[in-house]
Image (cartoon, rainbow, N blue to C red; front, side):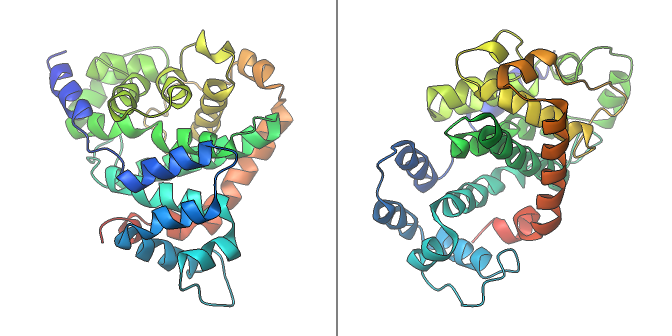
Length: 284
């Protein structure tokens, strides 16, 4: 594909997550991390601090007392919600740069991404995976390659894609020469993120990795599929979607669990307008 070299160059040169976000991810990987260290990291970025406080005081949380400091935010929301807000606030800038076509557009791509992160976190808790923050992070990052793909997508290419049979990844490879998971893998490898996280993002559609020692690729695969099945950000609605039985077996989940997860995602999307508002999250 003549566009592939251009796509790969774009992927390899995508600006990394802000330093503070990477430090936060490193900090929370340590089970004995200090809350004071986490608060101190967020405080080093004034614009991030401002966005965090704006979100804390929004209707999302409905607090009766105004939150004026990051320490207050931790006291009212807990460290997990603070980590989520940091990651969402920092990642949103990348998704606001997505191009618009039938393939995707910024708000649709971000909606799918956030829904997938919510699903990952729920599934991680359900199947007993202890690092639900890492699962949420995988969901947020799994679409990062689509930002680059969207910038070269054209409606004429997508019309041609209607003749391609197979999975979503098969169609992407036919259009772009690379699928979104492999594309995201190029980005997170360049960013030097933790190995388990990189592998999940890169391999969540590879059958061999869905049965690997870490359940994270299977969690991400299932989250992505159930969100697409729910019609959230599905670029190829003409293609059939099925949840692989081996994924359910790997995670020791049932179809009833999938239905519950789907309902949970729908409820979270309904109440999370602020976290879906790219205009509120990006910039200063």
